[in-house]
Image (cartoon, rainbow, N blue to C red):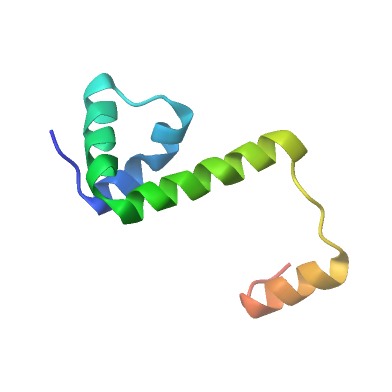
Length: 76
């Protein structure tokens, strides 16, 4: 079994949680060994996960949150 970049993207949450089946895990590892872009993405996500586990969620000041929400054109 092999996976494409798009397929790996769908599997990333389970990959990072360690909940893939052995076959999926092997396919993901095989893809990551040959795809630098996906390996970089996984590395970055693992770093974010480590930071979140270490420091928890950060609270933004109200003005920063409002600017971000406005930039993304989202309602509060």
